[in-house]
Length: 104
Image 1 (cartoon, rainbow, N blue to C red):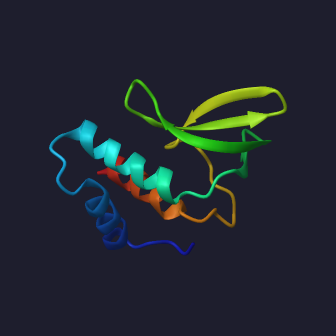
Image 2: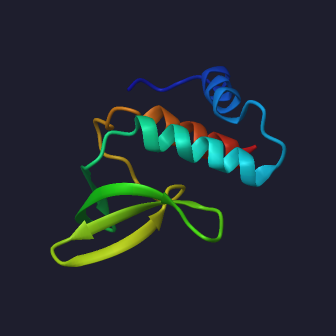
C-alpha cells in the first residue's frame, strides 16, 4: 500500500461515514470498512515482540481494537496504537483512514 494523500484518506472516511449522524455511527462505519477490507491474520511487532493480529473488533468504549495473540496469550490493542508491518497488509488504507479521522 502506498501512502495515501490527505484527500485520499478524507475520501475513504467520507465513503465509510456517508449517511451517519454522530461520532458513534461514524466509528461504526469505519469499523465495518476495516473489518471488510483488512486482511487478517498478519504479524507485526508490538514493543519489540512479534504478535499476530487475528481480527479487529469494536470495543465497548467505542474504540476499534485489534485482537493480538502470541502463543497462548491474547490482548487487544487500540488500532490507533497498533504498528503496522512493512509491507502493510491489504486493506491497511482503512486503518490509515481511521487514524486520519481521529487526527481531525
